[in-house]
Amino acid sequence: MWNRGDIPGSGMMFEAGSDADVRSHLATLPLVKAGMMDIAAVVPLQPYPGFGPKR
Image (cartoon, rainbow, N blue to C red; front, side):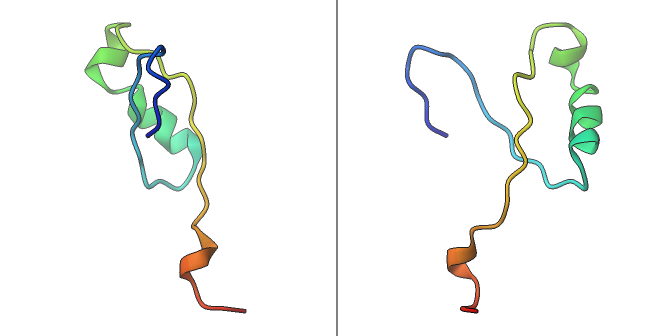
């Protein structure tokens, strides 16, 4: 994960069926429940096609 240095943060990667599944799991984390961690974004990713077979 790239960090500019002036914005603190971290990243997590999940494998899930939907954004809603990820958000519901994140809501169970103790730091989220305590209001000590904000979820700024959930970004769906796609597989990188460069590693797959040529079409």
